[in-house]
Length: 372
Image 1: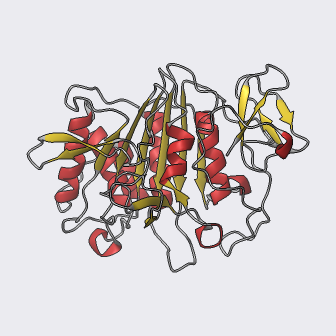
Image 2: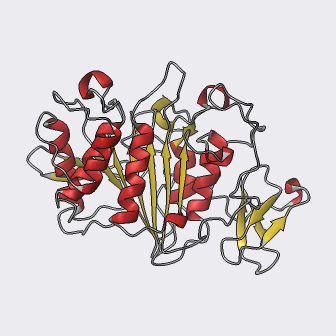
């Protein structure tokens, strides 16, 4: 359970991350210090009850020899923090798992290109984007489990009507057996942070509780999850089943247990790289564009080719591009950047994965305009 404390300056209720001894207010920027987090009374409604118990500070991993540092999301950072509730905020995470048997080649490129797209196409302020990759020099921006959790807390904290939030993840995804009866297929989907082998994975229940259920009316969240087993990574209640001819139906994915997985009045929509029982493309299918790069590439390409008018046109364009990966990729400014970063890799052959669309609520995918 996560605790609520009142800001020491403006008295706004703030969600205290596990083990945090201070927290920065998203509204007034004041820092509230907690002498003993265990002495804080629990909130009246523990919407985040799926979260795992607080973990000890992560041990230095083989990928990052720097000792763990205080998180910039709940401690005063050395420089000015990102704008706390600008109209557009994003968390972008790309993990390559360097020097490990899990290494991927394209995920950091995915993150860089998504940042470029958000800034140049959708007018996201640079100061309102948190990047988590192994290329970051700030240890608080390394994509460890702790840092990714804190970034997701930051993404939704203080959001107001009219805000647009984006979470993009490119890296490994997995599954684990579900034992509490809230998964139709009996498996939870998981994200694999850089230190997942020592600190564990982040389960879809926690992702839903952290960035979906708190969303108030007037706020929209888009997730772009480029990973294996990612179809329902946000645990949203409805999955769009679409045929190759473009006909679709909404499939109810509500938990058999009856637990609510929707929002608090806001909008939450997710594009993912493949269905829960599928894996994303590997290097044998994508030459220089690696296993989790295909979905991000096709997402950006669909926008640059003018297919991003509705959610239905986006999904159809992405699926068509995945099925026809041998065709010309086109050349928009972000696509060109991606191609340059990937040192000229070309696609060959078809990919056995289908991008998915999930939502907080069913809607007409060919009538609802797409915009980040």
